[in-house]
Length: 502
Image 1: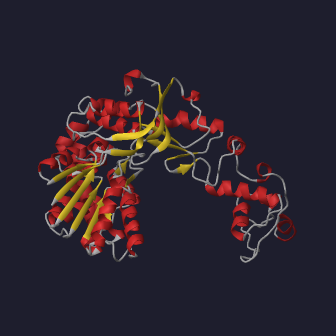
Image 2: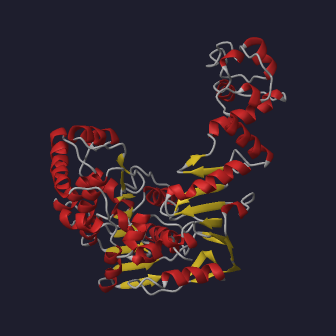
Image 3: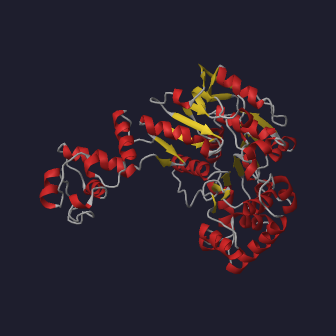
């Protein structure tokens, strides 16, 4: 039996799959006979963690088949980590053939290939989509400075380089998995986020599908935004002709009723080839606001998600947060390091008479200037079993100051000092995750926030591509709009000719 589970935004698609896992385990299915594979490492880990907790299982031993497809290929092929291409290996290849490669790696989370060299990106796209390199070259040129002969030569040289070094990349592992016909069989097979699978990954799935008694394939074609990375949403849509059941989860626990839901439906209705499905929003009515400039948006309270199609469109939001003293993260990096904020907080506590443990003191000392610690920066004289107050540190451990942090800490420029001061004045909770997350729309897929600020500008390459595939842009901004739980804020575009009109 084969079933598709369609999960519109916030309808609990993954929870539904995990509940099914629970049901099969309660019915006595051996955990090792359950395969649960997801596009992202995070989702696979969530599934294995829940199963382990609910049934007192060992994640490493009992739930060996809860993982990503790349991880499955790695395990079944018995590949060693030393044989897998690393960023430094790509840089070595670049030096050998005379092309600049500063950044090249497969994401540990979702297996997507990230690279700053267009030649390698096209080679990767050809492999994951299982298309001729010539066709990929013709489809993706878009005025890029790429020579056809160079592309084909580099493809040959890259294959030769890996063979000489005895190395493989993620795509090699998937290809070897499928060609060797080593798909495991399962009593129950789960595939999550199926709309993001590439043709090469679909071949893996079909190999397991053919050997499994029951298969559940979950996803949402309306949220398929990784076509640029080789995802084949059309394959997912076409499955409706092959499966026994198509189940639609029809209640969103995220999307509020009213203008946000209405706007999302208006956007996605423009996509021609899709599963026809409806879902009900929450009873709560959401709010939709439009602003001419980001400076008009008050993000001083609550949880926020600031979204744009590319990272450089977020520069204005970053500057505003810096000016206002709002705590934010960008590219999974906090605006101020966690250790520095802890050191500041602990230093001020120390000045007030609070005793601190060794780790706290050592962290403080690492930020103090040399002239106030008299060579005690490593705090080697401290006993791990004791706590220390300011007087003790001054008397016995080299400390020569009791001034506020901004007069004692070294290496803080004026801008950073003023930003931290503003954060403290705004009473930002610096010991929690930042309230404001700046992210690309692709990076925020699966995320949500009470408040979402959306920047509708798009890149020239995205605009060029949309001439042939407008659906990709519709899906991208549908995903963006449906991250909002309470309020959606839309900025006027900087350039109306290069923006998505909402």
